[in-house]
Length: 262
Image 1 (cartoon, one colour):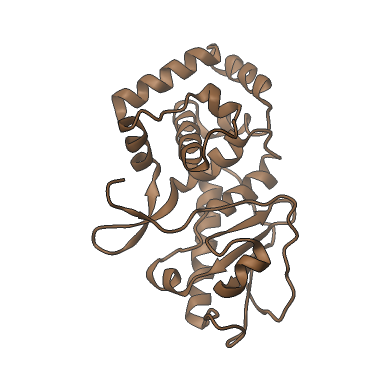
Image 2 (image 1 turned 30 degrees about the vertical axis):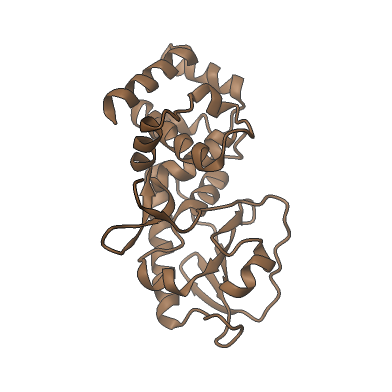
């Protein structure tokens, strides 16, 4: 990505970590969203002010609508977002560069970064919302490919970058894929389906997202949704029933697409 600076990883999901949700909290409710923020002066780093809160709620409600529209779902459960001040976040949620979610109880936990919040329209983004919407509407994913692939495909980005004009933007999947092709780092879908710990997250996440995005474009979102909960072998069989093609043929078509498209 040339000289672009990666600023913030989006996002880490912790399945078993117990978040420290002890108060005090200010609660703001709008539609099906409840935002928990620290009161002014809670710690040495800034808490969200009223303008921040309005901006965050508006962006996240729009994100829920966008995710529902893109996935053809109708998620309307109450979603709770806990925003931790920057200087407490690493201790309370194990990171001060992003956050995580507990899908089944529809809760998100995120770091409030005043600098990012002031410079970006939606500094939290929709990555975790995709996890929550997909998990509640489609079921629990059986592969990392579908779990993280959906989150990155729908948000069409992974990590933040500092652009040449000084603005902070999410790095698109296309930007990542162009770099992976140039550096001969393309991971085959068969390898994405059986994720190895040897594949770094910054290589796996955007490529999983791009492959899922390609499947959505090729076979439709509703068809791809039927693959979300399936284990690798059942996913391959389902794809064969849908397309009449073995997975290795689909893989070749995808790799050819990358060469010709990007």
